[in-house]
Image 1 (cartoon, rainbow, N blue to C red):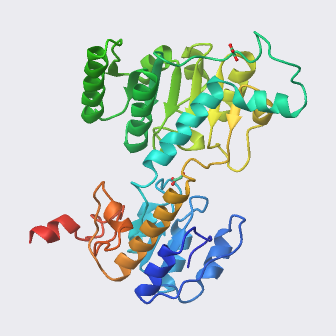
Image 2 (image 1 turned 180 degrees about the horizontal axis):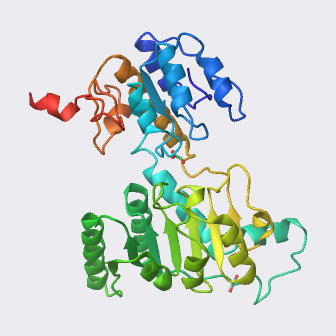
Image 3 (image 1 turned 120 degrees about the vertical axis):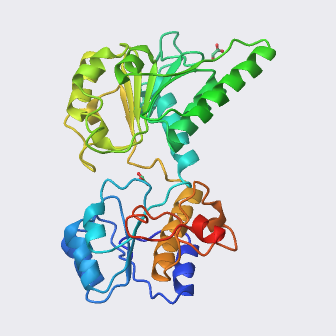
Amino acid sequence: MVTKELPGARWHEMLAAVGCRVEVCADTVVLSVAEIRAAMGTRCDGAIGQLTEPWGEELFSALRAAGGRAYSNYAVGFDNIDLKAAARHGIPVGNTPGVLTDTAAEMAVALTFAAARRTGESERFLRAGRFEGWLPTLFLGELLRQQTVGVIGAGRIGDAYARIMVEGHKMNLIYYDLYRNEALEHYVAAYSAFLQTHGQPPVTCRRAERVEDLLREADVVSLHTVLDDSTRHLINAERLALMKDNALVVNTSRGPVIDEAALVAHCRTHPNFRAGLDVFEKEPELAPGLADLENVVIVPHIASASKWTREGMATLAACNVAGTLLKQPAWNRPDVMPFLGSNPPQASPSILNATELGIPLYKDIQKE
Ligand code: GLV
Ligand code: GLV
């Protein structure tokens, strides 16, 4: 049972190839828990659900009661899932990492420049018939080259975004993460050496000890954390007040990482501050006043929405369910590209609770 139509045909073919009859909910509105329960009915071996649905005790117990043994989120993020509830019912939970990285990073870049160069408000101005000719002072924005970019959360997507901003725009990097990203630090150091051999100024990379240090220094702050109790309202009124008056904040992670009401208040009183948002605290609703702000660029949670990525996510979700039903090991390696090729591994690409449920890892099996 799949709660939304997914793009491409391959995911469907893969499930059919392992003998699954696939039922897809055709409705585009977000389904309620009761509607999802009804869709699973009394016989459902596996489900693919969306980040908009709360997969917790009620749904996992209903899936289990219907004979279900497999679930995959059609998303890399999994803050909509109660992993403890899934484990209680013995249900492996898959997600779809590794195919969103560049697509999501590119959207963060798009929002960065849309905010810096005011493309939203200037397009509205133009479409409203208010353009009366070129002016020296029309829509002045920010030049980002050689400024400082701050990346909060330097995992896969944050790392990819950082590299684009450093390489493409020669920005200095400051990042904040619980873990050191040595590969990124070495990459920036090597790139800096390369620039200098070509007579260009160096670029720097530094890991901030405190998020406050990053907020004070950065001209652009891009959020790439997971959403959990430690990151909810990470960007609040006090922290916004630390940022430069003409800084930008970009969010392609999860809405509640920003206190949206505080952001609206800050943008009102700081007209040169700008935000680029893909995600919202109470999606699909926007905080009162947000949509009226000229200094905010907003798109409807589409950071992973490239055709290649969304089809790849569908393939991974289908492989998670098929692999679990066939009792295959969990792949759980960063490189999931083999699943997109013609001869996919006999494994589930990414099972979040594999260790907890005693599902063997593919690499251990290969060693035996
Ligand atoms: C999208 O937001 C995802 O988590 O895949
Ligand atoms: C801008 O269009 C310029 O020619 O300076």
